[in-house]
Length: 123
Image (tube, rainbow, N blue to C red; front, side, top):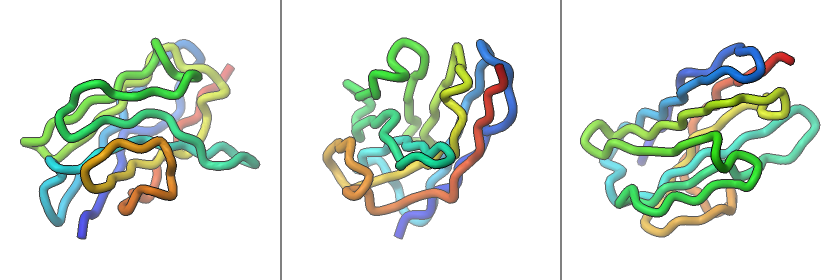
């Protein structure tokens, strides 16, 4: 079993930055793909970014390309999402997720999920 805990969310004004962290426990996640998803009020959960076990060639949703950066530190069993140039439309609950081996952008393919952290961007 893998447990995931997000942190770093909060309230920020448009144009500001936040860094989200996802701490994993239960087992090492060095052989897992890890990703971020988000869900805004009244909307479906959507893909944000995913990174493979190697840390190479991450994949981003078009809506966040050039603004967000996903990274991981397998020695610390932790994943990060650096969020810059935040917009009000980024407001959502952000979820950390993990799955064995291969990268996916489909939420239903991820086995483990965190509890979510709220990100609110004011105009």
